[in-house]
Image 1 (tube, helix red, strand yellow):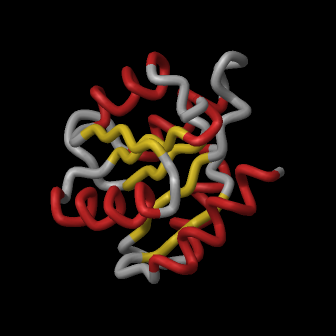
Image 2 (cartoon, one colour):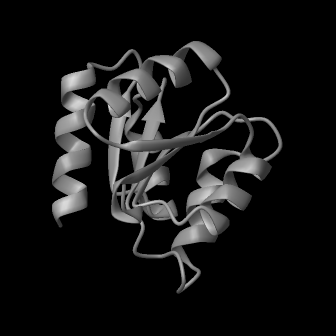
Length: 124
């Protein structure tokens, strides 16, 4: 599979990673995952993902910091970021936008919505 179909999941809840991985792989995507922010940032820089699914609440580095670091780095700024949010306050979405997120999915999420968002971002 080509790099443009590789998705990086940065999420510390193993059951969410497993569910996402099964669903994404069933739809033809290659999946790489990281369980904390520091590992996630490293993999974002080394695995050449086409898209990143990023939790906000993570050990070591939060999702906002990771998004900001990637979006302000020319090498990685074009990678679409979908933020997974448990909180759906207007302020959280604004903070995500300021950090550079391209889309938001709230937990618990519907797989179909997430897949539609991924397909839309990868075509953009």
